[in-house]
Image (cartoon, rainbow, N blue to C red; front, side, top):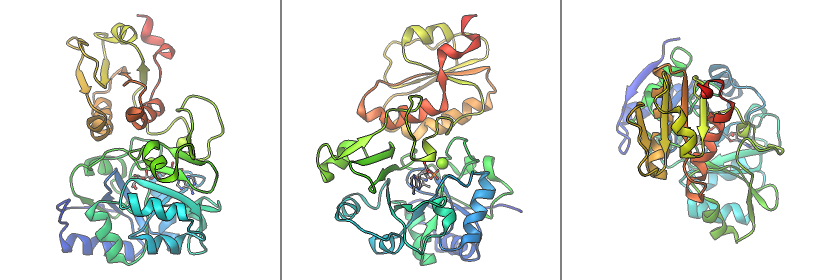
Length: 340
Ligand code: TXA
Ligand code: MG
């Protein structure tokens, strides 16, 4: 298969590019497009064969369910068998936006999307390209992140091409995504409501709407516990090179300057001297969200012996970035090369 790449404006997508995307989707094909979070790999949600093609292209295990992207609350209600008041209040306040709601599925949703389960993840994405595609198709779009399974999510069209060239029909390139990290996934089928994947919408944003104490979130990756969202498996969102995380300056000091080691500092680590290593710093939570996956992919291309990440502080505003870093890395103490 030849993958076609077309370029369009992120804020005012061209009618011709959207029409081409809709044509591919309506014909049962796969179109990659920018959500506000990361690039998604879209297929018409009500077409089981098209949905099956997503799993094949990504090499994604069938046990990992897909998010269904809808244009508005009305479309969401067609996909869910129940629409509780909590869903309505969250959707009115935070959609379009980076919040996925897990609800009981309706009979419209193919089994493959839910991985055979009784729930479905729904959201209205905020990017004009995504909304125009849903509107043009006139029905929901199932879309996981447009990367090979277990690799880093794509935040640029080049990342999609690097992972999926020849496996999908179309990439609509509208430049880097606005946020850079995947949506927050909130399970509304259990009480208290549970954050299955931390993301741009924080627990305090949800508590403002659902009430304090009504939302829980799991400990970060690496700690034990039953994982309800397959995307929360520890090895996920990972670069190809061996990657390690350090929590303290002293730890990372030992890695700085070692042959073949790339050091990445996330968060404000004032005074850290990276002059003896390739220098990669992402200062604020927003900057880190936008730049993290691209930085990790660029580090990978250097084919380093190891990537060593100095973690940002353990604060609520850093939670989603810390979560993705914890999944992408092992503790530095586990690095066999750290003693030399
Ligand atoms: O920002 C995003 O959410 C992007 C863009 C494209 O919208 N999509 C995305 O999809 O990150 P994906 O498939 O890479 O991650 C979806 C996550 C996975 O962790 C999956 O296990 C979880 O959502 N998920 C989807 N449906 C679920 C369900 N019914 N129950 C529990 N978890 C679910
Ligand atoms: Mg993904």
